[in-house]
Image (tube, rainbow, N blue to C red):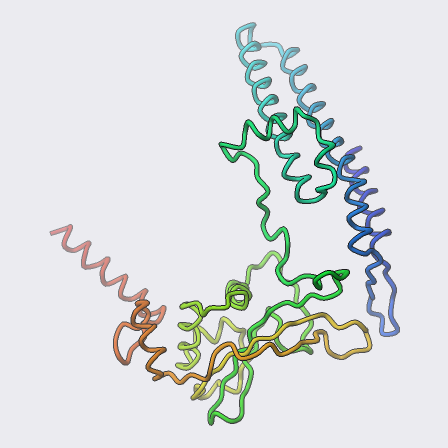
Length: 327
């Protein structure tokens, strides 16, 4: 309970120092960021050593109590207690060494200024474990791409996004709407976790890649075919303009998205146009067809294997293999 109380108090203090919550006229809650990049770094420099020390002491105390409990345990005999103690001591030593080695990359990422203050034993543990890559600085998106204005205070998000548009005549263009990824500037960011919207997530990576991913071209081809299973991935009923017939053309443009600043704005996003990402395409475009054939997506001149085709063909192959094996 002591650990929970300390963590709760720290979270409350951090939120109080970093954010100001106010209720707007319409009842919505407005959040204002109070900290700057410099003040946030100063706070990290202050609290990181305390957090590391707290975690280290808690780990050692937990191991100590575990060893004492194993020594006092009865019923397993002297040999059993000795083996139990030896095992727990070895585990504790491995945990302490791993934790000590992990302090170095943590400091390098979060507080480079404190690198010179790390104990020599910590550096030695890190250097000794480095050949086995037991600890490293990898973190899942530890730095979000596009966050922050260069040399500024992090006031811009500049999230890169791709907008896919379809057209029946090559003149009037209608954007495709996704359920989760930013698109319509009037659409509020939805709650996602713990769901993982795979297509929307992949679209972000496609926006980060200056080249064209082949899966993305395959996806555009499916839109040109108006394949029902693919349209369902964008969200049921979200693209009624193409419900009855497929577009003749599709094209892709690139945008940078940033949150709006005032609750009075009807728009959730502000965005700037970064240019054309892919020229208009028809489903019979020779370059597109060639890439799809080379990638194995286009199985025949006039037929693209759908998910349903793949399942059915796999069943046929399995039945054929089973009958041959039985014979």
